[in-house]
Amino acid sequence: MKRFINGAFKIIFSRTLIIILMLLLQIAVLFFSFTWLGNYMDYIWEGMSFLGAILIVFIINRDEPTEFKLTWIIPICVFPVFGALIYLFVISNAGGIGLKAKTYIRMKETEGLLYTSEETKEAIGECNDSFKGFSNYMENRAGYPTYHNSTVEYYPLGEDKFKDLLEELKKAKRFIFLEYFILERGIMWNAVLDILKEKVKEGVEVRVMYDGMCSILLLPYRYPKELEQYGIKAKMFAPIIPFLSTSQNNRDHRKIVVIDGKVAFTGGVNLADEYINQKVVYGHWKDVAVKITGDAVRSFTVMFLQMWNVSEKGTEDYERYLQDIEYEQPLYHDGFVIPYGETPTMKREVAKTVYESMINSANKYVHIMTPYFIVEREFLDSMRFAAGRGVEVSMILPHIPDKKIVYYIARTFYPELLRSGIKVYEYTPGFVHAKTFASDDISATVGTINLDYRSFYHHFECGAYFYDNKVVGKVEEDFQNTLLKCQEVTWDYYKKIPLYQKILGRIFRLVAPLM
Image (cartoon, rainbow, N blue to C red; front, side, top):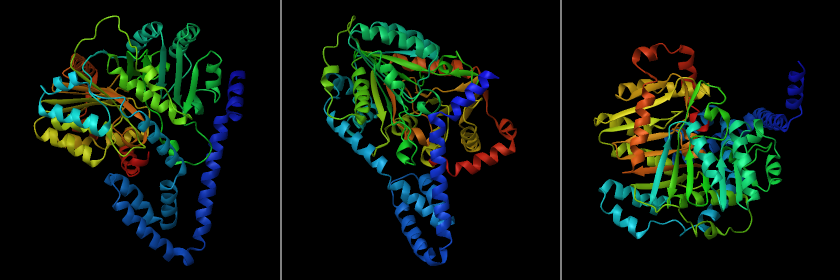
């Protein structure tokens, strides 16, 4: 009872509750303001109707997915005053404009630091036209070059990554960079933190950055100050503040570790105990990660420094972290590696392009693991066209969801997928958090990017694409092993899904682009 009272006391007087109350207050003010305007509807109806018509024309002509457009057109038509004013509030958001400007500055600062070497270009020239075109696009349009002198190790579970991560951290001599969406105190983070403390004492520069959402439920708001007491440079990306702002929708969903500029980790695994199955929340947690050693780490180093400096003043000495990198063993060729990032403030959809390219170029199969499936019509059409061409398109989704509404929306796609010949499986032991694609025994990608609007359009994300690399076989092998623990979704299975889930899924699918 005492523990319950203490817990309730902490919640009542916590910053989290204050933030929630402030947000609710602002929503209430907006609602009653719109209601007040409604009392004068006779005077302003014609004006708002005209404004709504202009906004609809504007929305239709925007370079956005059709689903985004419909999500706004419907409320503007049904609720002219409320819908139009909310839309104007969203698109005129100053916070988002500021974030875009800061990101652009850091991207411009690092131009020229990432490039494909002449040796690698020669090797690419011997590949098929599909990969040559893809590599050219990724460097010249997206800004992410191809690397040749890099090796990759694949971890089919979070606990596998955790064990190796600790060993690599202990080897650090110069610097350690960590960038994560979630950081939570427990077995995993405490073990990492113990090593970081020791490394700081040895003179290693340590930087830790995590997303500001952690300040809501997982960490004290001033936790970066606590880490700084150990000599660790720490910060939250975009701390949650009690003011309505659509820029707060742009979360840092990346998972990056860079050690001395020669080793990098990425994948779906956050620094929290459920990711290594030390805490059970949604059954068995299936997640994956990769460790990259070699030249390709350069891109992850730059991506981290770009994000770190978004909230900094002045400029960073980027070259300092890209030079004098020494390896115990000579680097050797193991296919190609293209690390890449998704930046919502820039007008490009890198992650979606990588996924669609793999689907469109597949001849034999495309195998996918993803925790969420909420995609636009264009992406779904790519999958259906591949299946129609005779490509085996198979996808593993969770059986135990972490977000029920998102889970219900994903299941509304089952009829369309099944009719197209796409195979869908649910991971019966628990929750799949892995984000992997494997295709034709020749290409694969592992990263942080989900198949949903958040990852494609709202979040900062990252991943690594592999071509003609040994790790492709490991990704495919893991898919086949995971398949043995899955339930195939058939028409009979779909018919047994409760009706209320289907109804809720269909309703919320209307606003899925904003979720």
